[in-house]
Length: 183
Image: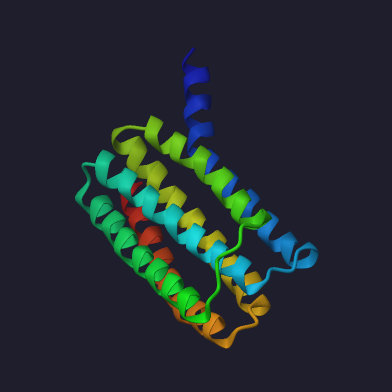
């Protein structure tokens, strides 16, 4: 019985990583199979940021760890700001973000991740949330650098993505440091 419980816990810890790895692989393969238009890139950018905001809100609700809560608030604030910039740019350019397979895949994976986070408690939640943030930022950084920036046609959209890339790197470093402190 103890072995089954340990196995279940190990699987739950790995789920966010494997889900996000699947998204990363999908996005990377999409570069060769799918050409994203600027409205589709805008949709991916807004969706990816909203997913991180949503996970941050779950962390604020569930975590009792001050460092995790502070990190979650930073994710909410920073990613909400990126969404606002992307929406403002889309309005300025008269572009409506367009749903696409990458956005749909992100949303599908996020549904499972949120379900997993909501089922965790205490320190296990904190670890699951931070592990997810590390994996998610790795996946998003890869997608931004390998797919979104190279495929963006509009220079202002490309500039926004280039401006956000270092912020994502900083989030990853922060998440990795927090991950190490929770071990």
